Amino acid sequence: FPFMNMRRASIVADALVSPAASVGRRRPRQRPRILPLATSSELPAPPAEIYFPYGDASFSGIRKDKSFFVDKTEDILRLLGKAKNVICLRPPRWGKSLTVDILAYFLDKNTSDETFEKLFGGLTIFPEDKRGELCGRFYVLKFDLSIDAGSGDVAGIRQRLYDEINDEVRSFVRRYKLEDVTMYPNNGLASLKSAARALRDTDPDAKLFVLVDEYDRFSTELMVASDSSRYDAVVAAGTPGKESDPLHAFLTAIKSLSGILPTRSFVTGVTPISLADSSSANIYKSISFGQSVASVFGFTEVDVNAGLPQLKQLSDDERKTAFDF
Image (cartoon, rainbow, N blue to C red; front, side):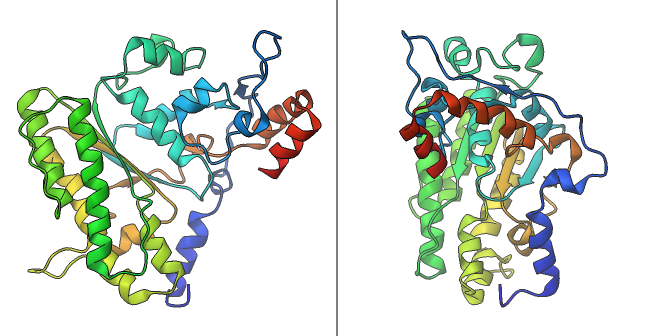
């Protein structure tokens, strides 16, 4: 990143280090719980491109297709802890989006018993005494900020962000049958606050959980492209008296929801740079290098060693497909 100083470069390097390497004492290795390939003639094994779901972040899809899945559900409770606003940073393809999807089903008060059993049945977190006090207690609002920064100006990026926010708010309103929500096409943050107020008025005891996946995707695109002027305009905190820049405005809006109703949030990303540059680091507690969450994301050597033997059950063509992925 040519325009970054050495401090930023070192932060990037630190953020991409495996968390297990950042702690002095590793947790004992345990054999992971991996759902096996079906071997019954009545239930044929799915093809390799389904069984090994590379890049698939749909928890329901993976469970429905009986795809390869390392059961780390017991560990995800440690991600939430007691902090109201948590951020966890990991490199791409470490399972952040899948973890966010798992959390959405786990926390959502609208997840029926039938759906919960279909998705979590057989997993370590399924028994009631393993679920903890957060399971099924929240109205869940999930955002995916992997929007394309594109080549437009800051106003264009802001509008794409607002469009994403409005899409998710509409889905939220439909799912929980909220009324009297005002949508603002040119200001997704106003739509978000309107939905929060409607939820409070509908259910005075409501608790909201906001999940934000890939908070820094669009800002990192600008960083990698060495587009420092647009990066600063998109990320840095706004000048007093002027409209806040998109990322800072969004993160601040999430924090402000606590003034409307009890709100918690969980955010994922790749590096802490955009968080710091948007003056939002004081909002979130980073658990990125905590020893207790080191095993939640990615595959450990033990995970891989347990999964590789299942390739023997595949045909040569399916095995080649799996390795191509």
